[in-house]
Image 1 (cartoon, rainbow, N blue to C red):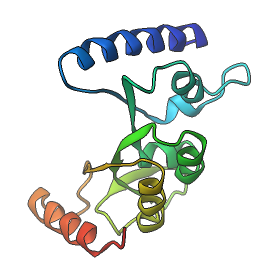
Image 2 (image 1 turned 45 degrees about the horizontal axis):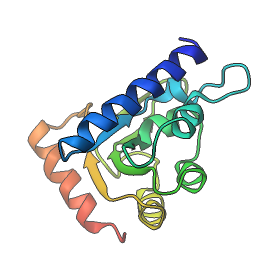
Image 3 (image 1 turned 180 degrees about the vertical axis):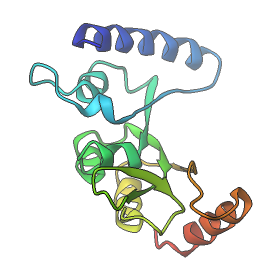
Length: 156
């Protein structure tokens, strides 16, 4: 992808935002790590956030992918207050080979959700969406229960 692609996406997001607003709902974009990789000294995520209309386009921060990209979610909440209305809460586990990673049940990884989510709420974060992909020796239902217990234990 190129910066021109991201500019085109921003235009499309703005158009979608206008359509959804007319229909009483919101449009939001969910990031992955690649939108944080600089291109010609410009970070595509930054470009999209600056070139979309905050009245019609929201962003859903996937905290896991921000961390995978080597970025700090708190810095992004500060940089773009009131733009990240939603977030994916998905924990990050570095594997034993130290080059690989995967998502894991909340609390088994290294992301400080209590601090990040508390800060995010001060910067406009409204909705937390737990996302579970890998189960590491447990069942999906047990992982769901463990994730609910973890979320209820947070001080946010």
